[in-house]
Length: 129
Image (cartoon, rainbow, N blue to C red; front, side):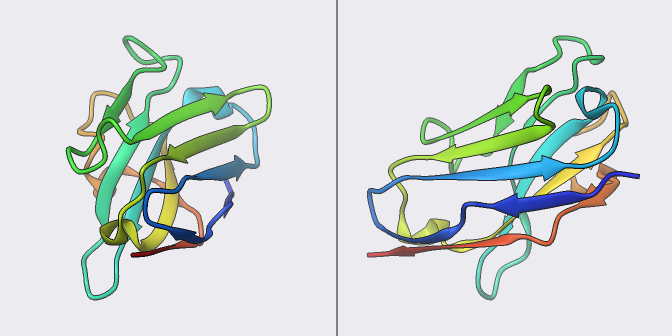
């Protein structure tokens, strides 16, 4: 069982930056691929990015949605059981509840939420224009 707790959300002006954190409880954090998803007002939840587990082929690789590529960066600190989402050059359309997720599965499509086993409660990010 893995519990995930996000933090770092808040209100920021367009063009600004925020760093979200997702702290995981439990053992074997490094064996989980971690994903970030978001749900904007009136929208369905969408994939933001993922960082693969050490046990996967090319462990530690990152994948991003086209909408955030070049602006967002995912990293992880396995010693701290934490994954981060650095968000730069934020836009009003980035306003959403951001959630992290974990999966122990391999050889999956990282952008599909159905493959993730554990989810955090989410943290609100609001970007003012």
